[in-house]
Length: 125
Length: 489
Image 1 (cartoon, rainbow over the protein chains, first blue to last red):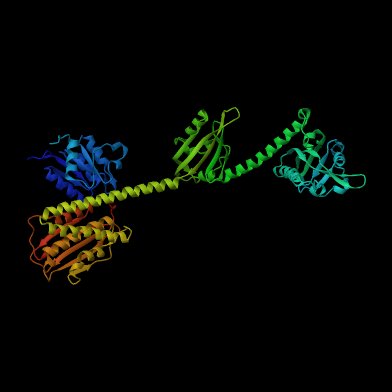
Image 2: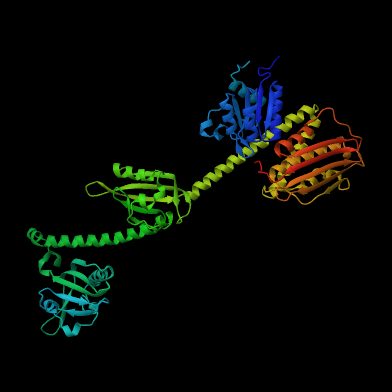
């Protein structure tokens, strides 16, 4: 059976390689194609801007001591939906990003899938 | 002038500043019954000691206080009503004290330098005007009408004034020494009428007396405080600020400092109820606010680290599970990976998370194989926390791999680990892990979690480089890691 997110290209911004590897494993299990991962804001911004095919993104909020919001801005500008991942929960987001879809570390495969489907507007099976 | 003084029907007394009798006029001699030559040069209060009456000490105190006040403030002082007994010689040369009631004015006389040289006392014997005061007999309506009540009123006003005066002094003293800052602003331009020491300290001891607040504290423009004061003045409603941010210049020419203040602006009204000024009172709560902020930051940071660590452990668990179908080998491998992570935490905790020594990490990961099989060679190298955690996991994977498939899987194999630091300014760690004497090595056909973790960690987390060479005589891992980049939290 084909997964609902089959073939979607998902950018990953995450500074810890083990967590990035976990996300890639989860994405591959969902038949998504991981893009990146970017381990810092500058790489993340470049990938968000320049990657031709991008369906969504998973953004760690705190990346190597900086906040990921410039990457979120770049994605928003080209209409690519994204999910924040954070150890702080939604309360850790500044005012202007409140209400954005957020998953909390540590995350389950189901949480990642549901959040991505929600932001991409893919109906639950 | 001297003749006029002498001839005046009003009794006059001139005193030196130390309250000795300098001169009296004829009227004074008459009213006191004293002889001029007996009293000149003598201290006033030993000359006229108000007699043995119970109230005498208090009466003396009142007159002395009024004189001292006139002297010390260089301002005229009035005693509307004061009792003061005077000696009277009876015919048989006996002396009795007779209760008298006086009204007195004390005027300082200044020299060209403004110093008090003399004090002029002008007294009036008003005993006969005030029967109600002199006796304890009930006051008649007539008495009240023609004199007694007026005098009593004068006396009570004076008592009120004295009480108010001392209350005022006490209040001013409390005001000046209050631990919180206090200021009184007057008029719709909010001119500083009074401010205490704490307020001076708050604003860096600038000279603000009498100035409108917009001139006195110009750096407050755009911070909202002028407007709050304007509103209080216009509406008469008090304003309370809590942990209100203020940027103030606390040293001349210095930078603006950020402060947090709890304060109240309380309108001051005149008798008709119109707002004439604003009472400002408050506390600098900067230290508390900063401590609370720091605490919140620390809790957030702790939460972030714990959640990240849990995500790391979750990742290790899931990836380990994929290569270990047997629960027993899964548990052993998973546990050893968690313990490697935990051990590096211990090393970092010992230095309060300032860093860990490279050799200590290597020794821990290889100690199970004995010192003869492991050769560590390199300078003392302090690793930043994130680098230490990554390298701890990497050495654990290399050692585990060597024990399973490499040089440490046979009795004679050894591992040589050499490292050096290149570029002291922008430090770079170069480390070579070389396995010798083990079984013949072949390139693995699929890369396991261990080798992926090593490569990803070095490149992704540490912005370094790694070269894993599967030479036939043994694995060679060459890694280069910058040590002085901005550390990841």
